[in-house]
Image (cartoon, rainbow, N blue to C red; front, side, top):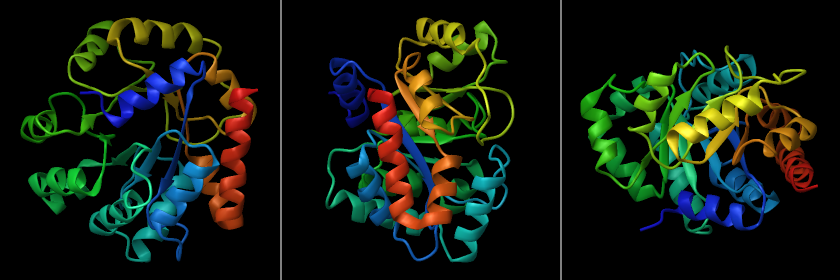
Length: 262
């Protein structure tokens, strides 16, 4: 049975465009409910949402998302409050897929079995744990594999062919291709080799490929939309939300969507 993620990529393919996948950190900016932000960016053109669960040691994230995680934790955000926000969002939006983006420790602290059950019940569609490579935690990976949650995996430019095949055999929904080595955050330019690399990953995994890490402007989003099935924008949206609140964040998402369709 097709999942919400499958249906979204299928719909985008039929419409001849890439999926826009904004990321923001649950609990940031302080005072904004995650459900409120998700509803607003979905209405502004997000096809799929990455909802970040804040963590005290977000090693894969750059300074912008790190700062949003620290602020969210200081304001009391947690795995439980993130799931509650998702549950609230689902009461008004049964269509937009949501992928929970975080690290292994918060999930283990919450309880892996409870997390899979509660995330599913809250309406999550997938999970991406940046520090959970294939085979790192067989018990947790098996719990997710037998659940309805897609287990999204990262592929890096440094991943060799055999590693990409290994990842392909143990992920579902889509593959998240990291546009460059390093942490999240905007770059002034993207590497020209991305086109060839995305094609190679798509051929190897047979799943939609979404590209993230370093996409910060509508112009960059448009270029990547011509290469991949999905475009992930995180730090630039977090920065917009931080500086100008929900109005600035939704305006930025509309700019991205317009550029990708232009």
